[in-house]
Image 1: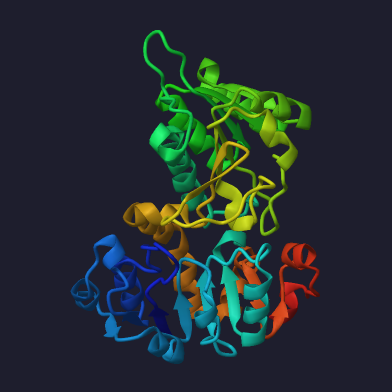
Image 2: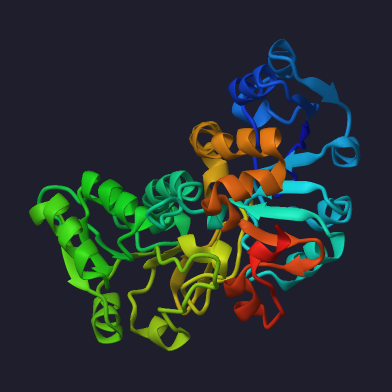
Length: 370
């Protein structure tokens, strides 16, 4: 199979679909790989490094999309990339379609086979291709939130861990999954006063056993959240409904009760955000202020630590890329039903129910495409 990797074009997106080491494995498997020139420069990988492991370097994204049987990316295709997709071509990347009707319609129109990293499952129903970026985003949320909490970042001028004689910042983490767990780890490590809100009894028990007295684990209810918001310095939104739009847990009406200069970090922004006032921002202009509350809503947070993110992502995504390239997408999905859960669009049809429900679009069972 001819596999193509274009250079990412989303604002400040420095990750790349394949590392040189991943290309080497695909080439050893007998696949052909073409890489757009300078696609790997954001992770410190030169064209020469890709060529040394058997890839061919091409001069433009249009050539990648024109020639490749499977296109491997990181972020959702931008409008000009959607326009270059062709019927039957495989697109393997993050999609996050639920809050993005225009992209969804463009992919349906392309009649390409679109496999979303974020909805591929494992035997336990977990999301193994989303997990590494959730880990990165959770840890990064505290890092960027701490910067936004500084006075020069628009915040209250509070040091996350405090100092002797001065209390640390109060950090609320909404959701105790992969994002929330990693955010809480970082916040605890920096000395913050951390409260994790969670609804699953099993997850609450696991979190309480792990953190002990270092973080409070509380059952999440609207009343509990509303009360905690009044004294929070930082709130990390870390909720996820696989493939669906995120629920709006912090409403506009709640903002006036929050401290001036407090910070909201919306890690769920790829799925539309879990704060009602959230809107996607970029690394160029990451924050905005509403009712005195600083909002950080960058939609590709892990792109800021591109090398770490790319290597973590490839460790999860490569196994399926190899199977697809060997067996074709239908053969790979028949061999592994978990990969079938990643099929979001196929042959002009939407194939993921949560996206159809979120956008009010018709959809079919993904299995009918096999």
